[in-house]
Image 1: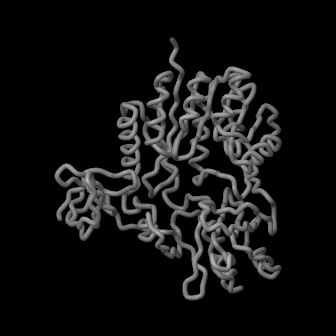
Image 2: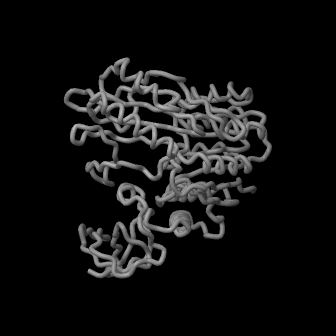
Length: 436
């Protein structure tokens, strides 16, 4: 059937309409006319597979990485300026759909300095092909593993270290993980920030021999190597319950803006370093001088530390114990005595602080699922004067704003592109308590 693509979907797919019913067509973009075949039909929508493009969009380009385009980076075939337009459209559509927030509140998107080679970390599954270990990704919504020989989105140092680690493992005939034997290499995790690199091999019950570790030590600029044991068949986590240092420093020590950070292998850190700095600087600039600043979902405490000069006391709340340990180390490392961190659920931690003192400013950077009902209730009851909400999911941000609007008004929304070649967009929403 012939379809005209009208808009972009939240997963980067083109959307056409057949008798007013949306048809999702991966690999197509607005303004294109395609010949497609319906692959799945539902009551209110359908999915289709493209047969051929009859009319191309003027902004379509040859994909620099067709394999990554198929595996979660659908914007590789779009010129970068147009990517930014689509991201802003997805954000503004979600804000209007779920919270009736008009487009004029959203400022122009802050572009990424690097369109490619921006990811400072990779977390990749390992399989075996023709007797050799290979990295790759699973096709969206499937268990089909696709080998990827080179990742254009990765920092070049991450790619170099990944390839050298694999080469050494293959020289030693190290096997891929087997659920039957519970041995072998399952995942590889590499992080490189400002030229300082850390890698973790996630294996079964294996013990790595000295000869293998000695060869790993020869990899230039690999500052530390860890091993984590994960034999759980159902686990959605990469890391196991125990992680051991094989050589080097236990934590990365990296300069970040005006501070230094200890980062453990398990801790979350934004994937686009330069854009993270821009985002955090912008967030801190929105903190007015105050008595009490609270950061929920604080991770390793980056924003709390950067904003420490704006508040008399800063409190960070984080559920991940590894991240909280890093946050406490980072406060000590930077001699910031007014920063305090607690391992707790966000809502529980907020209630605890609010019972003792008035919260002036609340910084929040929740996961993609957004704020849960308990946290929304905690915010509305504790009533901080100002909320700085960082989100990586426009839909959950908008749904949360719809609830917070009962007591808060939007001052501004600023978008940042942290993930070029994808439809994902990060944004900061500044809210102020409505004065009666």
